[in-house]
Amino acid sequence: MSAQAQSSEHLRSALAEAEAQYVRANPKSEAQFRKAEQSLPAGNTRSSLFYRPFPLTVARGEGASLWDLDGHKYLNFLSEFTSGVYGHSHPRIVAEMQAAIGDGLNLSSHTTGEANLADAICDRFECFDKVRLTNSGTEANIMAMVTARAVTGRDKIVVFKGGYHGGPLTFVGGASVGNVPFDFLYGRYNDLETTLATIEPHAQGIAAVVVEPVLGAGGCIPGDKAFLTGLQDWCRSQGALLIVDEVQTARHHAGGLQPVLGLKADIATMGKFIGGCMPIGVFGGRHDIMERFDPRHPDALAHAGTFNNNVMTMRAGLVGLTEVYTTQEARRLTKMGDAFRDRLNDIAIETGAPIHVTGVGSIMNIHTQSGPITFAEQVALENKEIKDLLFFEFLSHGLYYAKRGLIALNVCHNRADLDRFAEAFRNILTKHAPLWRELKGQAA
Ligand SMILES: Cc1ncc(COP(=O)(O)O)c(C=O)c1O
Image 1 (cartoon, rainbow, N blue to C red):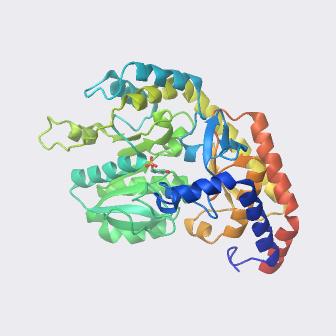
Image 2: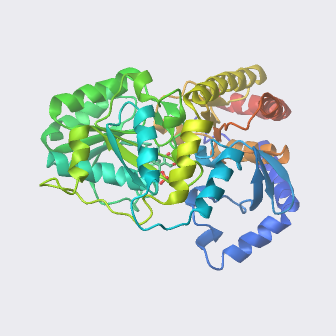
């Protein structure tokens, strides 16, 4: 029996009780949700933030903490879906943004800001000879794919089931009908053999293979090194470009995951923390490819965007990258995340809960099944009722993460914060031990 199919009266009533407690505790968030629904579908403008019965409305944040409209304080373990590596109000970034406002907004020309930030990005990440800046990771990925099609003269783009490259590039739980209409081929993540069998018949039409080093929104499933380098070798042998989406993983180690995994993309994309809390996307890579964006090139490609060099992002991003989330700090947070994930997995095993935490470094995902988890389709099968139960239980302990199980650490988290999460994890899993025994009994 799949984990999803397993349920019980006890599980349903534990979830109903946790949800009812949430509703009782959050009347102001509920009222705000009803109000927002009048002008926003389901009261939101980011699908990933919606959950039933209504999402929390957050009023403010400071350091690693959030306060909701009803006045509850939470330690934020979501960190803005990994973008918020600086916490909510890092003093150095706030000071730089205030200085940027003082120098005037919307400067209507080149500024030193974009050159300084691009220089720092190229310095830190080996894959970039040159970069272009956008306003989101989504836009960066669309530009990377458009560029690959233009440079190779081919149409097809290989992506992976369970992959996520932005709202209109969603392949989690199957390709979204809202996706951009590229000619996609679908590989199986962490399965080189099946992927090559699917794409090889189309080799001459493939412009690019687009892959995340860790399947992020698909459940923080680490990419197998042999799988990823196998894709790289295949691209090189077939004249297709390798696009590595490091929008989430650029925060790991000193320079993202590519050097660690033996990868060097033809085009890579980044975003999230690189804007220093402000919106950003980055695409870039090989000199000969990026030269096509030089308007003096005979076959120049256009890439405009009013806010591509907005002064807030340029300045916040630069101090974030060079003064706050330095390579040393990135190494520290990666190590801290690896140890924290191991600690949570030890607790899951000790308590006998059908729980496993996947991930790399400071980004991880709680799953409601035992490990190992290697393939995207395993995540699709997991027990959503347990996931919901854990989420509401953690909220009642003043701990916030994504309902789908995503946890991202930030530089404001200290040892006491991690201890608090781990203790709550142990308490919640222990409290529901009879439930785990019952579900195990069903599966046997
Ligand atoms: C791997 C990956 N690529 C692309 C994106 C899209 O970035 P953005 O939300 O800035 O458009 C995300 C966002 O979560 C992501 O995780």
